[in-house]
Image 1 (cartoon, one colour):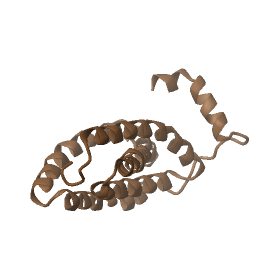
Image 2: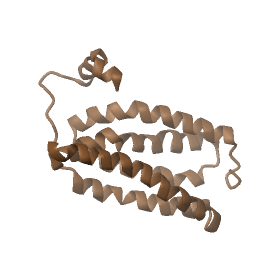
Image 3: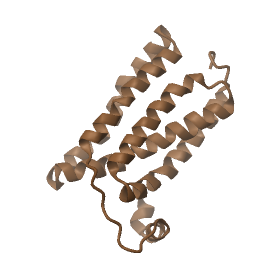
Length: 180
């Protein structure tokens, strides 16, 4: 990047670590949602995403970018992943509308890319990287109150005596888990 003097290999490494973080955190946030609430996880994830996006242009060292983009931003996106969103809105909409909601949520990610990619590019060219990323972070921050509105504070109780390790052990033994 011209503004931060970070190499493409550094950015690529941060993205690769982000992909791993994203994949690892999704099931962990699912378990945490059972213990806390989906609302907490969605609001936490939205906040982490917004903070990560806002901090990216201020990263001037490789380790900073890896922490911000590879861990912070990816942790936020892992917390508000497809499974968590569907698991949150399906009970509110009911089984009858779950299929339609799933399709809309899935399509919205593609639409988001189509809409935001050119907007981000225009922002980078017209107002600069820092200002564009901060504006984008503010937009993402709107997900915090939206998360509060679409989710309840209710949490599913975990069966008595089941700890996180037991839940993970059961998941790994399930063929459904491996198919996912």
